Length: 381
Image 1 (cartoon, rainbow, N blue to C red):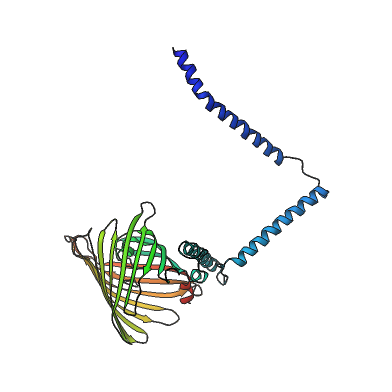
Image 2: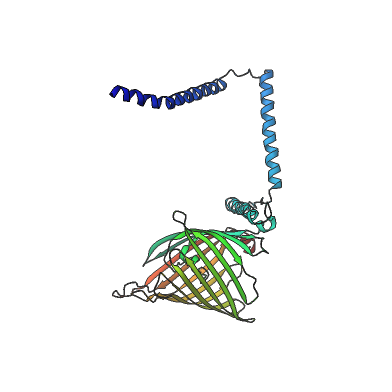
């Protein structure tokens, strides 16, 4: 009985074993032929066979070079490096070329095949490395990146974006609240990769509306939908006041809304005073996350500037509703022949999380390095 079962078992596996044996024989023969071709006798140097082989090799290299030059001439996203600062210029041109090519491909999905070349060349963005240290939070380093694509389909209303930023700030519409947020992150949260599409509704000088849909995070993607409505309340030669409303939905916070009021006043040709207040509420949080800030901007010419800020922020549903208040100063200037920008920051604040503990002061310092590319680089230079 045992012998019969063994024979039947072997019989059932025999066809598979024969197939594998045949495949091994075939691969062995191919490997042997390849080895023979590699180790075959080489012609004598100077012999007709050697000369013919060298000529064939040279013709092959010449064809490859001509093909490469032709592709380079026909590549609409080929940009010339200035080579004044070789490493920086080459990096900037590489980023511009890659993003331009991606814009052409993406535009081809929604519009004409091949995409709009002029729109692709307007692709712009930046890469930024932020380093901060405070007595309260310790050392923190973050990398930010943002690329904006114009897709000239649907009457030039469609756009795309990709980057790496604080996911909570971006999704909830809090990335434009302060010029100092890059050097001093004001909200907790880790930077995540973000990508999506935007659509702008017909707008006027006083009212602009845009919708965005996308995903955040690479390991565990989460979807988000966002609308931005910006309404100009008042504007003259010296004053600008507007409201920005950002309703949003994402798989983490649910539905929510961010409301921002911003007022700017020109004091002198080189001084601008700005006051803004912002608040966010969502299904995930029971209270209002708020912030008030007063900023004085000073233009120092040659694309250098100073910003002085006094701020206060908190959240109403936390044990300590007044999280932090303080002041800081930021100095921004071009670096490496205006290829990059440096931001130096220093400040002092009084943060507190536990209401049962004393509110101690905290020194803050920061350094940010930014590399713009595309039209972002052209406009800043």
